[in-house]
Length: 105
Image (cartoon, rainbow, N blue to C red):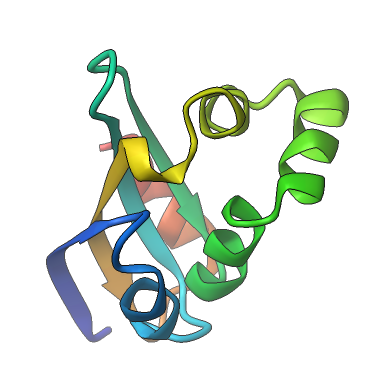
């Protein structure tokens, strides 16, 4: 299993770099709110798809309504410029269970 560790992005100003990084692969990530210091840890089976959804106001609103997502609420309230993300694990050949296990560490 090939793993890449620790890549930092400013969500607002580094949108293209973030969306290009690890295109379509599973990942564990950490998001930090620069306004209030709140932080979030998440995992996904497709990093690019997850962050495209974070840039879409319609998708964020849908997530808040249907899953009460804290990160989506925060992104809507403060805007993407108020956050940075650290990709903690980028796993080229991980399954969903492996990614969820890494997120829980």
